Amino acid sequence: MAADPLTAPAPHQLPSPYGEIIETVYRYRFLADIHVSRLYNLVPGAAREALARLSASGYLAAIRKPSLAPGGPQIVYALAQRGANYIASRWGMDREKVRWRKYHNYVGLLFVDHRLAVNEVRIACAGGARRCGYTMEGWRYELPIREDVDDPDEKAPPLVLRPDAYVTLRVSQRRLHLFLEVDMGTESHGRFAAKIRRYLAYKESHMFRTRFGGRSFRVLTVAPTLTRARALRDVAEGQGGERMFWFASLTDVTAERITEPVWELAGMRGAKARLLGLAGGACG
Image (cartoon, rainbow, N blue to C red; front, side):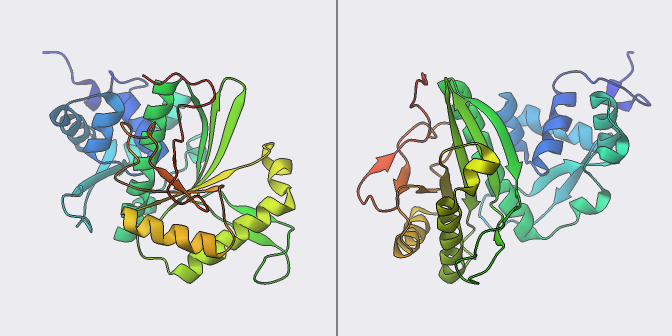
């Protein structure tokens, strides 16, 4: 009987899709079987079996959790020690440079649910981009922005922003710069309004172009429900936010619907926009 490659002492390469799944979990930090099923076009049972094998072999950690949302995942997967060693070996990098430590898996329920929601948007954008001829050039979680610009509330520098993700998409000669805010229904309107004021100040400062090389950016806000998304849109409008602020519900931001006009823009009541499928893209 052939030896199981998952139990080999120190493999540098695993059969597909096991190695790819380890790398993806590392990039996303937390994933459930439904996410792996979508990313690799696997039937749910096959995704569950692959994840279970990787967990049993020590590459991934299976984290059982209660879910805030009915029907949400009860088990999520994160990198484990052997998985981190595999990443270092596979990528030819110093093990110290692998951004994983065991304590990274010990976080609260709200953090895990929030990261899973952010990952839902990432998977939707990646799937839609492929279908429309876009390239996802970059996805950075919680990018810290700290500029020598007056904060609109403190009336003094620095201006500090920390979006849930900064995304760059390219189609033909056009590049889209997107900041993502994923709301879980726990943030007060006052705190969200302060974010809007800081984004507006950042736009007016023109520092974005200096740092990121783009002429403009959009701020995408995704909320659990359309009612919540519209409430946040109202907050943005109350702060003077207009077309650069886009709002949608998490249920509408899927790989299947990301190319549809599911986004509502601040200052444009009754109008809906599509994020992908423009500027030369050819969605199928």
